[in-house]
Length: 227
Length: 319
Image (cartoon, rainbow over all chains, first blue to last red; front, side, top):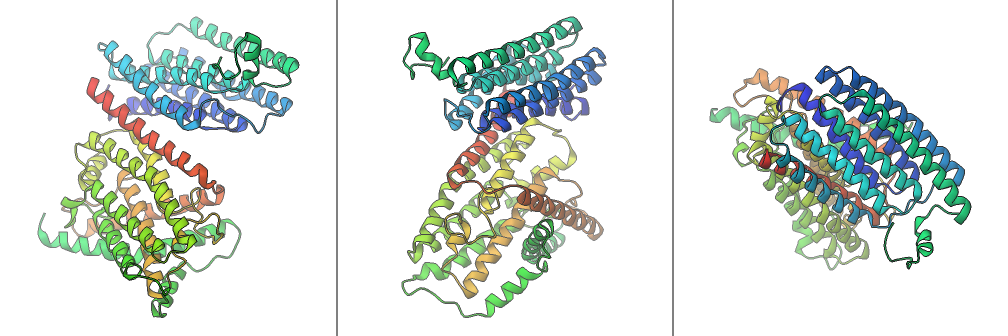
């Protein structure tokens, strides 16, 4: 498949939209906006996976899309919103690294992902290659978000958005077994649960979700480095 | 392509751009008023304002130099030249071989330069403030525009707007992530260049927030009419440019007869109308940004354009 054919174009565009939402996540400061962006990314991911299922003729991917839509576009954002309401975190999501520096680092990471993926996959079709590059970019941007944010909830969102990239990569490759997909989805739900528990615990101990407070307890200076 | 249709379409295009510019501003104002539940002025109101302003005697500050007199003509001339280059209803106009996107960016920069000079000429605080803000925004908006142009140049192999439009209309390029990223970047640049809402409020005279209006405080009469016309023409130019790059459907080909032109005109009017409605809805829904956050907003646009170009460059280079 090449450019100018509808299945390719739409898959490419949806993958690009998921990547773009990763940048929106990096750009937003406010907690509510970050959660909304994450929910949108989940919905777009579900669309992308469903489109891949149609384009590849693989009905298993529809289940994946359904799981992604239910978990990432509805359930996890609702839980996060409840957490935010409970902790009264509506206002703050101050990044440790500045927004501009974070975005520049993001573009550099996308370039890195393309440089790594394209030479490594010379045998595969164009669709798989560029989709893989975009998926790896989403993974790297999720990691970047975990590095640049101080709030525990923002870091959890970074982790979940990283997993979005993994699902995008898996959907682009033919023949992903459903069992793997389901276990990954289950893993993410467990992760979200653990992260929520972690946030509660942190809150109970320090009365804050700002992770820079933890530095003192690791025997480092507060400015020394980010977790 | 023969010479006569090229000249005819070029003249018709320029005349239509000039005639439509104040009307477009009026339509956007009317739509915004309707969306806010007000009656709204007649869409022809900007034309009436212009007629009134032209008849009035201009008042100049005592220490105004020749810059204040000449700058509006230079700005309007540069903007009109740029407007003549952007294909509206038909390809293959007389100036089409010269319609380079970088030339359009340069002419717009020239107009902005004249505006900033005129604002600083008299030496009032507001004029200087507005000029400084306009220039600091431009430092982000112009590179973003040029990077988006770079992406189109990689896709189409040329920076000629006419050729790019024809290529996109044929659909050979397909839907690309880069096009989406360039669209977002150019939308942000267009909002900043025209002083529209998240960047600057076109309807306010509140001192602390204004950018474009602050630069025009010292002009009156004929000069003010020229500046208003220039602003309206710039808005029309940008909407036409966005339509030419991202909605290239229905534009008449180079050798289409008058019937093709008629269809092209209809398509152009529909595209401008849709963009005007989108602009009005967007401006009604969004609040103005703090001035200090605008460079961040435009910096994000710059990075999106860079991302699109990098994506395209690497994937075409390594594929």
